[in-house]
Length: 105
Image (cartoon, rainbow, N blue to C red; front, side, top):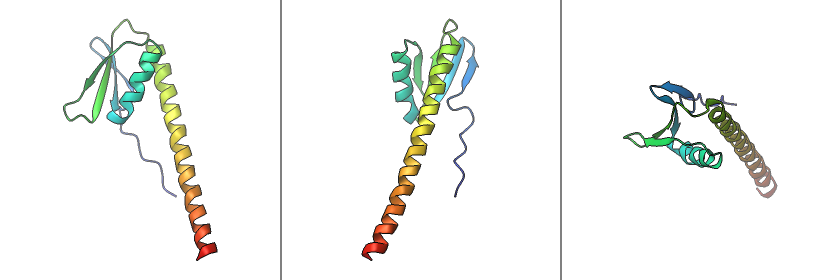
């Protein structure tokens, strides 16, 4: 059994900025987060890093931080749940394949 990968510091965390606050996300998370922000009526500016691996969401000073925090936490929880399901399905498939191999082998 292996330990889960350590989340890089700062990803998906709310950080204070000069004018408001920022969330930095990996590119693979950015699309889903952007859709959630739109769905919940949260306006922000999306800026991709030069390398394209990261996306920063800039929120203005007037934006309700608690609302953004709630959406972010919901995304992180759902993302964690889907990874747990994927891991479980992978283990079940491995067990099934091994059992099938023993029966047919």
